Length: 60
Image 1 (cartoon, helix red, strand yellow):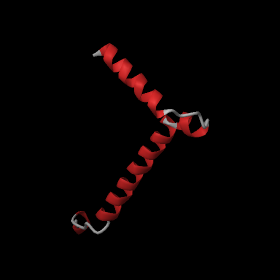
Image 2 (cartoon, rainbow, N blue to C red):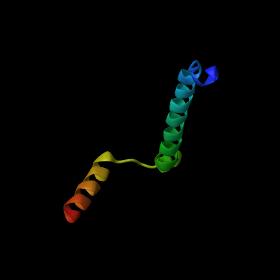
Image 3 (cartoon, rainbow, N blue to C red):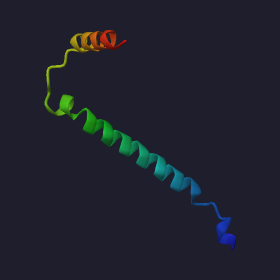
Image 4 (tube, helix red, strand yellow):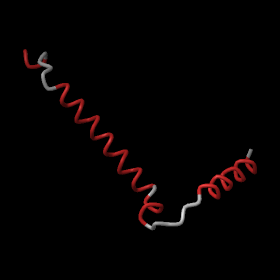
């Protein structure tokens, strides 16, 4: 039963889980924003901000 008290590999397993979580979040972000990255669309930050503000004023 001494193997139940052995915690030598616990730190490595936690790092692997943490690294895996970062990879999953990165892949999700890539999938969500691929329209901007892959299509090389013409981004206009001012136009996007105005659109968000207009929508927020309509709803709020």
